[in-house]
Length: 71
Image 1 (cartoon, rainbow, N blue to C red):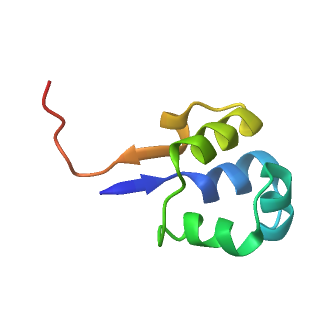
Image 2 (image 1 turned 30 degrees about the vertical axis):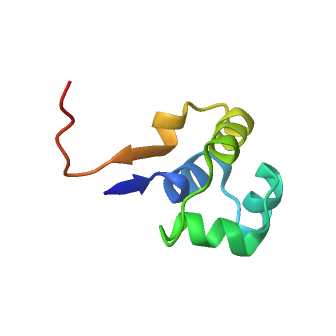
């Protein structure tokens, strides 16, 4: 299952409300809410743009939970 750290990044590093944070990363507030609540997931392009704007890697923001990754 794909999870994200958007809320913790927003609260711990930026101290912004959802609207300000969405504007900061260049997406609509409603779309951001869907991402933060894990209702939808961004495309790879949007993920990369968000990670660049947040100065994070994609893996810092999104991760797999409770799944074993086989090599």
